[in-house]
Length: 114
Image (cartoon, rainbow, N blue to C red):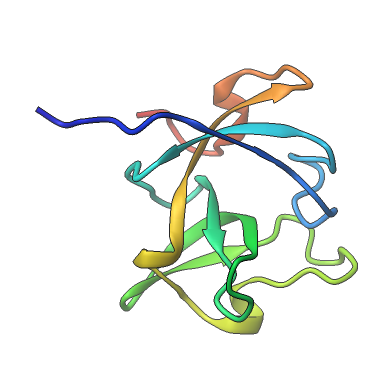
């Protein structure tokens, strides 16, 4: 039997995930969830301990995940193009739903839901 951790709530800051996510959007995140290409995840910033980032998974790269911003032109955006693949230990969880403003869970992923 697999034990699921409680969902955690996060708020989006910045414009790096436009148009899918806007500053102020609130997400529910499933810590420890399986992730794959197309998922939106919350991760620890590899170069700034204690800072969380929200990014889209593009692929597995060696021992980590390649995470990218949807809006590469966002001011101050940083993603795997800047710091490389993000190790598993820094992946907090997968976003499963945007609850403010309301949006269906399927709109968070560009791939099929599990």
